[in-house]
Length: 537
Image (cartoon, rainbow, N blue to C red):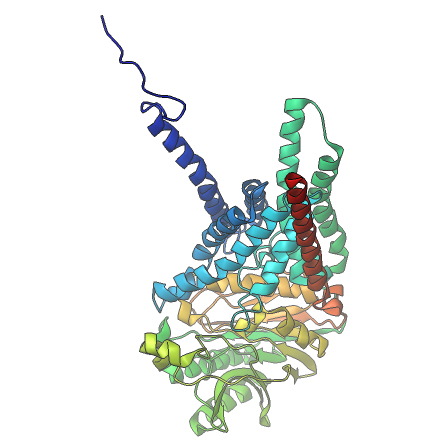
């Protein structure tokens, strides 16, 4: 006969046989939302290029909406931060390719703070009617802040930049990246509401009309809006056509060391241009009206070095067309990342100085402090680049070409200013050699596709080492090169001068969505205050 010892558990003393299981269950309940939030962030990352799984952004935000639903702002802050890390850590891994994991981890950790604040805001409005709208507007406000601070912002990872292959892309022409991103996030949060509605209806056999309307609007409006916006997308040649050549000369080797091979990089681009000229003269390729070289294609200043001048001049004469050359130029003791318009007969006739320069790459914020922490940074960026002040629109063989140099393509204002200044075609000269074969070049290429639709312009992307491409105004890539190969792309492309609503409205749609976010947060705060007062009566 087995005798069981009596339990010593009481009202103030838990049964020791069940306490460990209860603690484990409580720990599991606490950790599960954190794990789900982080995995939802990873899912959002997977929706970004080079993959074409744009639709995964919708379940990513649906899961985030479910995790944050009904929680306090503190929990939202933590869960939002985990979502941000899950998204940004893999998305930005390319930033540590050559300089180690420290800068990559620091950048992701700082940028995820913005997502944490968004998470707190989404949690705060999750009890309001129409919560998908408020939540999506709060996400847009977070992106607006992240695009401006610190150090003039870092817009990389805007939801719009993951939608180059998606059905929502035409919305870029309606209201730019803020409206495109807002629609995607709204549809994701609306998807969660729709799923919840279906589950509730199945369980209770009753449908709450307000919840049904919110779910329907959250999913249907973005999709219908995107279908309607397709009428804004066109690749019609309003101003005729021009034949453009995009030259990719390649570099001797990838990584930061490519910069030590500056003369070789210049020679490679001149050689590829001469090879193209020979094909043109032989009748194998159409003669280009304009030729576009990438950023840093001549890091030897041609204004100070006669041999570099002669190499570029010979290439222009060989191809018999004006060339936009990416150079590093020293003027009045200052460094500029410059595009130089090189005429085959007159030589250099115009310049554009990059305006949105890259922190920690082209200039070093807090130089004294960072130098005290790590002197390697100050040696890599020994002198800060200076900023240009004017838009860059070159008149090349009768075509007005707007220059958006590399990093600038991530900033709404930098691209729009070229179009409003009269650009009929946009060129995004870039240098991705420092990031090896990482996803960075594909992420940046997707940005250019979004910009093409946003402003209804052909966009060319000449890159030192790939991927160079030609993109039509509807976002379609018609030609592209491989990575770390020399090559050239020649194509007759449409020229356009009309402005999309996004171009005309500029920052206004983003401002309106920020105001919507502020209204939702104000409502949530007021409702919380009223609730606490009522509970205290």
